[in-house]
Image (cartoon, rainbow, N blue to C red; front, side, top):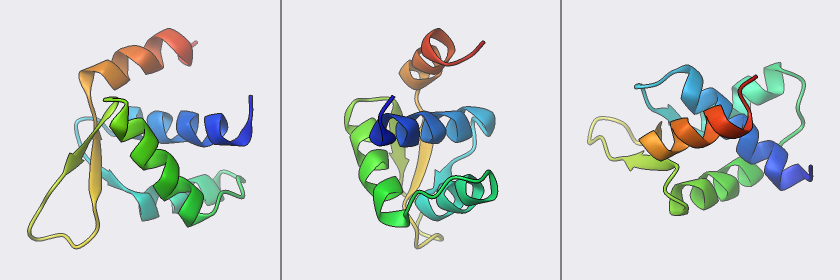
Amino acid sequence: MDRKNDIRKEILLQAYAVRPLAVSAQRIHRDAKKAGYDYTLHEVVEELQFVSDNGLLIEVKDPLVTATMYRIHALGVTYYEQHYAA
């Protein structure tokens, strides 16, 4: 699996783990770094947009939060369970 797919998998993993809550790019980046990955925040933001454009995540607009938040969509849950869950 190439780096972009690894990042997408990590994004879905984290969004799946906290559903139905939303996560930010900064949180995903921080948690990935804690897990030992060397993804940059820029890479995470790019892949978040890609995964969102494919309908696996929903962008959540909250007027009280300045960061863009993402919540996993039902399609994302199904995709994660079919492709990554053991």
